[in-house]
Image (cartoon, rainbow, N blue to C red; front, side, top):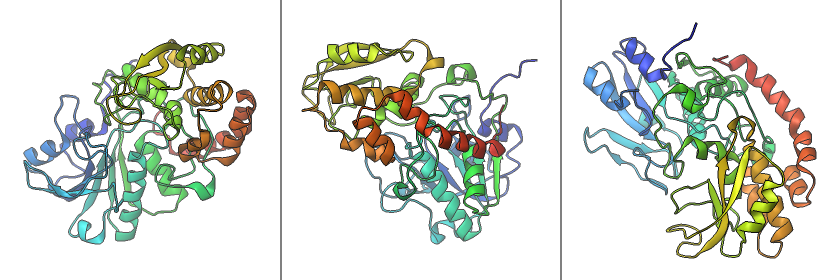
Length: 378
């Protein structure tokens, strides 16, 4: 029997007449992605029903509208006058004054399924604040847009945990934010009074297209489910001297540099099929790295998403550049998001990717055992 339709936690909350939040004063951790399937923003839902008092809006990277690409200052929502508190910049979590009189912290933000996508770091920071200040927390769950069957990549070194590696999880973590919240709470012994409103009819095997939910760009440069799938690997190169397509129509689906011959790179990548075809292109970024300069590079076309391993693809790019552009490409920036010294050394020493993946498999298998008790979907 088929379960239809897939409904995010916000929609099931509405169906339940907002019972878990009715009559409460809430701090709402959110952005533009928190909408019902009919396009109603969570703030409008809460205000229009007059069932919930919103004390403040807590926003992650890219701000309330999801359009900002820089640290954001505090302000006020122009339509409601509600205070907007930025959690991306000097402050990453709500403080005691922000939570004064608040009965409940509600989190509703669409994640991308990647460790260094900072919305899940904001989730953890808010949970830690909830624990310190004794405020319960409700997570309105949403699907992982790149599916829940596969995990991939190394875990970060313990001393390299950061805002882009906030917990020991792999680059492609395979969890929803609700599942992650439960894992954080248990593994860090936070003791948060946590509730999760699950996604109705979600299955781990579902890709975004399977959910039939409308796509909203979760951030300015993540514009399609295809780009989301490529992101955990392609973005690893972002802090090197390689453009990952910011300033083009297809960020994270195109890479290049003025010194790069896309034909050579495409030939190297296509010799090791990964469910992705690399097509030589030339492009001129309008902003960010190499803006206004012509870059040679490749465009990635997904041929079979079921066999795409984005981390392997990203490391394949790195090794191809090390072989064909040893004097131009500077690999050290890989460590910024990779956050694993041994894998970095193996990559730059051109160890085979099969051996590299085999080396991180025990820690990945251990993570899959750790995540099992917290899974909400099967």
